[in-house]
Length: 298
Image (cartoon, rainbow, N blue to C red; front, side):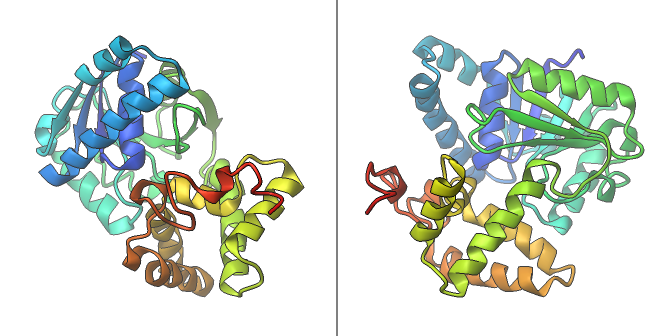
């Protein structure tokens, strides 16, 4: 693996985290987004990450400042990818959006550039031909709060070159991740194959008014010893991200997923409640109820 320049396409919650973690580990990083507003929001997210790394990882101010200086920001895709050894795509979880992105990317990226999708539910083979380089394309999926939940799931498809697969595994380790190789395509990889059914079950319990979200979270925490309940996880991941996932499933004919997507949109997204980042989702931030010392007993 001889990667030096990494491009991250998408400066949302997870894209910003991937960019900063990669820069923090010494790589040069280019961040691309479709407009200046997206870039400005991404810069603010990364500035907040500097403070978080100082708090959670005890990083020095000098270390996080050096990491930030390794990052450049672009609204022109051709400029953002000009030196890229690896491009990590973190655009919205919608087939049409990703297909359009790869079609444009294939026309401007250097021949050397490896493409990796961070898609949490869509299979890389769905986009492999649109990339124009199926042998240099695979999936690289990160968990949210990348500096803490430091896993990277690397999934190949039938045309992925084995050397590329091994190089991306090495890259994931180089940026501090526990690299999890996946040898066959599986929608949801490992993590989301386990997590999404939990979140769907929790949402169904709430929609049916079986219990409120705090009670459901308490049940999961007490019953399993987990640090967070499903609704706290939904807020941390971002309700819009989960909405895009269930909407994609709904659009394939899954009526239950479509109902969940519509409910999330009406009850939360349309009201500006997107989770932790916007200050409110199922809980209110910066001091959510599940952080209270008596959350499990009151």
